[in-house]
Image (cartoon, each protein chain N blue to C red):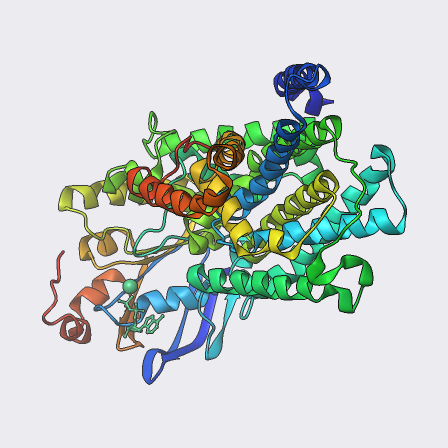
Length: 312
Length: 256
Ligand SMILES: Nc1ncnc2c1ncn2[C@@H]1O[C@H](COP(=O)(O)OP(=O)(O)O)[C@@H](O)[C@H]1O
Ligand SMILES: [Mg+2]
């Protein structure tokens, strides 16, 4: 019960957002395209929150987040295919299962690699991300349905405003409760000083694993929603560039800030899609000149992020 | 009762024998100091006792329990607290959070209470906050609760580190060079603080220190190390007069 009483402000806000978006969508004031990227930005927020738990709060640098996003996406798409799921309600258990499975994958992979520090961890997660991409490219060799390098086609469109918004809000609340609890405090202690954390009895290996698996769980849920929004998955959607997308959102939002990640997710998706509209088609690749330049400027000007720095 | 029994500790780094068959014990309620020149192996002894380093040989009994080979995070849970020679605070966390972390480690709640914010969650949090506040008052850090730890002046950071070590309510506290970088006036305050802390929290203390004034006024017994070995052990007065000790310290400042 406390859960709802505590969260009433956020729930009320979510209801207002829902009402406003619903009106805009129903009366066709916003195009299908805008509707799609609005939902996509919520999905990015969920997955980025996961990376924020791992990196922003616990200090474990990961360049493999997109791989976990991919595990969630492919798992959920496979589940809806096998069980012929088409409605939102039967999709919920499939989505949850995809998230949990992704969390378990994070746990198993986290056991060896979370022992590594800083740059070694970065290389290990990068390696995992690359390996996963290769695996996806060849996935049709062990499961025809996954589609290999041709991509996974024919996924039902299930992700809608109601589903995305309620999952996003629920996960934001859960994440907030974790971050503000003793577990969040242990994560931040570990980020600040691992040996000192040990000296007050924190089982750092276990706590890092917990943060990592939970972060991967969020990535998996995001991936599941993504698969059923765009109805087509391609290995290139889950490579290192995608991981960097998540990293950018976490960094712009200010490491270790939930609200920061939410704003940054909205701004980032809006910005990328905005460029797509503004730039003529043949100059679209210029995005990958503009974006890195902006990032360099950002790092020089505000290395701690644009939005906030506070957390607990 | 012996709170700590150290038997025949050995540790080498490459070819360097950092600690060479050290044995000693600490009785309940005692204050024992380890002194010796730089590089004598004092900090290594601490790291072996607290499990931060793996022993090459030897055994450690803590409150009659064999703790050799336990993961280092287990020992604080059994009641062994420590500070670090080169201070390790949670720099970007607030003063308050630095203490809360240990409190909530010792007396916490489970993941269910966390996710659903049960009454137990709120009760435990407010109890921990209350205790953190007591520590903050005791160490004269009131008004600084919400400052990031690394924004405090050096002296306050050292006090905070001591407070954090106490946040887990230990029986035995290992303090590594608490007086490092302090002037005589600050050392005098530190001596008073350590006395008060020991009294208030009924502690047994093992202290590494260079400042002989501090060692002489606080210790019940003193262990002297040089080149990884224990060269003598005795009452403060005996140690002060011992020729081997004076020799070991030759060329180093010998204050007090
Ligand atoms: N982690 C380590 N790796 C290599 N050598 C070390 C390590 N820790 C300590 N030593 C060496 O062990 C010896 C004792 O060091 P230490 O215990 O820090 O001395 P003290 O605290 O008495 O000044 C020194 O020669 C030091 O260089
Ligand atoms: Mg030392």
